[in-house]
Length: 498
Image (tube, rainbow, N blue to C red):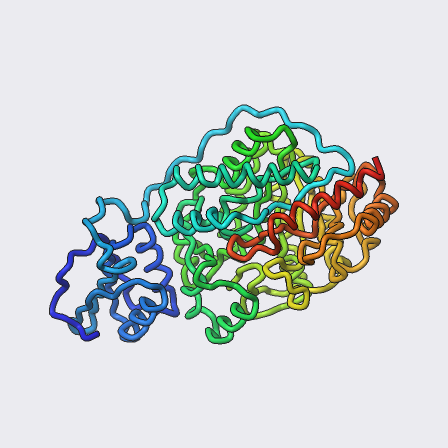
């Protein structure tokens, strides 16, 4: 397309990208401004960077947005991009559709709810549950602005009812809502925080050293890069609404059982959200970003305790990436991080301190830490492998009430290593492997339970799969029927010990 003298259409919103190129944060700013627009909305992008002339049309073709026209006066360029196709445009959106700049107040705390106790040898899922196809479609429509907030939550309520009913049929002692409202176990946080936004992984291709290698890795891992989204920080983080407390509120209306809820841990969120090309516009360093993440998680933890969550689980799978992958200078897809890892000793200490800062002064017995080795694919050969020995010292220093650990897969090593964890903490052990299509035999599950009881004592043991059944909404590890059968295998086996 050649430049024109002027734009025929009037933009609905505009921003100046200056001399940023597409590999240095411009695409993230485009996403920040275009996502709030409805289909057919028009965004004007001002730029003085010559490479944008070729890169922006390629991005538009890749993402399905239409480059309507562009102008050039000296070094100054103006690009008019339509969200979707221009043929979808009906009328100019109302003013104020762009991302708000005001800082809303933090929601007040509520009166604490009564919480049922979690018994010894309690069976439970880790968190996620396979979403019905119509739930996944609703999720994408909501993120893309095609489904209103209320309609999305009404759809999600139905999906949660089904997920909890399946867990109850399996006979578990503790339920989750199946994370039905989340696109993944971690990145969904960006859709709940102010000044943070979900962007497609395709927008991140220019930010890695080798975009072709990154794209090939995603294809090899069956990761739909155009559908999976990654959080980007554009300003100081503010929690003006709950991250997951609303999930607990609804789940408790449809079950009498204790409700567990999972949150991404502070180290995982820091590694995920810190992208130097854009995050440093709001924070001087990832340590500064981490301080705000700790504050946000403490606000959420207080709300969850008041809401009646029986167990609040912090997910930190990237801890295993730190020790089993070593120091590295490129992102790891397992944690969605583009930021550097500075080496195991530094990173483990950083993670420990962040977790303890979140947990400080809260009831320890209602908190848990989950660690695994990656759960984006059922292919065991591409997941990390290694025992807990390099992690035990760090885990022991985290002031948490329970450890919920991947243990069924041979990749996790020997269970005996976990005897070094604090005696006053509960030990959750994975006794079925969600990655395997076949449902485990009752005798095999019972043998793992017996080993855990012998090592840790009956009162400390909790039972669960190695990880969630659908960590990514678009890429579930197994079908809902298999998930129910695997939980039922746990509950059948544990009856031998009651």
